[in-house]
Image (cartoon, rainbow, N blue to C red; front, side, top):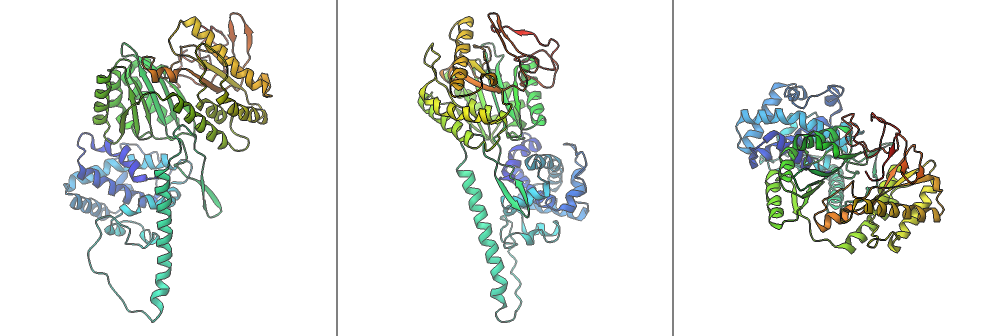
Length: 532
């Protein structure tokens, strides 16, 4: 977990706005390290742990450092080092403090903030300047490896003070320091290894834990990045929208930005809100600038995940301009055009990622995690056919075993197509493909009463239908958990109970806009027309 990089991506743009000079960005980076070290002190954090800190509470900085002399020293030292006006430096710090506080709390999740910051000390301690020891709690820097050596480029050049010691005591005193340095180096190597060898982006990452005394502390980085996937239509409307978020706060933030850009069309956006996903999105602060850019390009698509924005459009010139404009709007992000479709590579990668996700489920898994893992795979049906490819059978065999072992697991299998046929034909084909998946699982021993199917045709796209890549992503099988449902097969369609599907398109309203009815809808218990 690189805390400073995270804060630089999420907080600095909000504080600096258009004035993102390197000097001010560097000043904030160093402040974040000092601020994190201060919050790592239990007594300091305890003073306001139960307060509801507003994001614009510029007086919060004064409550973190109650001594005016310390506040003055921080702003003065940072201003001098980075050649920024002292008054301006103080203003930047005051703005950054409450925002950084919220981001750090979000990263910590259920872990107490001081504990989280102490556990991840290696990610920010090297940014702490030597002079900061006077504004941090006693012993804070002494607890770090070789205190005074792992610091930023503001290291003091004053000569070290040397005192004579009894013969033989020098090496005895040095041994603990050497040990701590070695431990620090190992921790840093492990951190770098994690950054350079990430899990496949589609794979739910297994939760790692680290020991802290007798407790097990979840590492905040052990979640899949939050993501947003949108596509525009021919008339620049919001054509498709999906979101994965770690909490409703992030969901609300993204929905507000979508509503500002697309109006009521934002209600199309389906959100999967679960603690398997991160509670922050590096691009969230720039969504107000990003979304209008994408909206202005017909039949465009965009995927935001982690630090990367991937875009596509049917017109090459428009695509390159889209990349350029987005990079200018979100300079901290990596913006890239989607490459040509590698069909076999996509299939192979999806099966590898789904297999890893299934392996990471552990004993007695959450049914939602099982559904997500199964949905990762690409089931590449032949044109106009509904025969399960051999490549998917091993994974579905594993799924059958898990479904049988988990009590009360009920899954809805949903078929989707692209738009390259009539609506009626696509509904029928998607239903046949969903039924084929159910029939295969039942043949492997799954109780048929645990599975239901639904063909949605082309009505629920997750990408554009104007590019080969978008159409490929729209042709898919999804698995969704049904906690309670009643399925009655009839020629006219499928009847499903009020709470059949969880995904409310917009949790912030009470509109009748869900994929299927649920508890917030005005009309409940109605039959679903398969042509919708």
